[in-house]
Length: 286
Image (cartoon, rainbow, N blue to C red; front, side, top):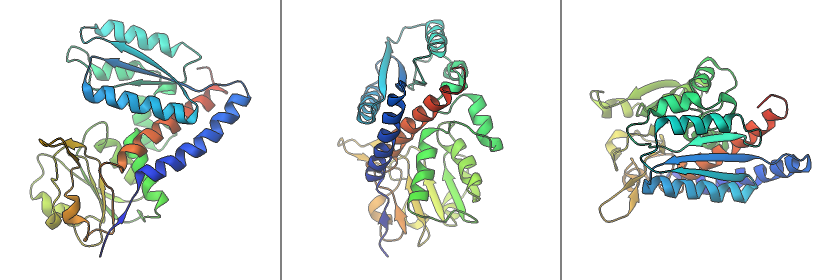
């Protein structure tokens, strides 16, 4: 068996093409979608992510505005900026780039972002709505994974989905997304014992643990769908995921590459959420 590669890069292009059509329709009605991105500090990785988001917005016609602050910026200045953007009707989506300096409570900042403009899906109201099955902005990486599974017609109902990692950004919202897809969900984390015995039962294995090539061939059953969320830079400067791609490729039925898998879809879903927020603003008080 050789795995079919889930090409997130090509799927993201398809999503952007459809979004471009929606943006054009909005602009015909005098509505210009706009995303505000806030970054505190000069984390190199964050700078790359923000540039990529800016380029993606440009490709579909979404306006993009950066709010850059140095690492010594106070929490109150950040919160005041968010509140100002909440009240700006020309801004449809607000994204706070993480990480932020340690003196800032990022969860407090996420709570301050208006749920209607929370295109990253981190405000507790959106998290709660996702949990109870109400309409919500879904965290972009889990949202992108769901879209990948749907695009490749991968059956989720009744399947054993194992998620490696329990972060607020990926792991926890991914749990709910897979429950909503009628999967039987198991979560593994740093305290899980005999983790390889759990992962070998997975029909769908989603690795978001932040350890390079952690998932080995002996941890995956034949025919499993393997989704690799990890992005790890090795000492030689190359990038790899949380999955030993070469070792698992001939055992899995589907697999995502790193790079070119989950990453492009994460940004594509951010754009999708911005357009959703823009449309909602036509009918609600933003």
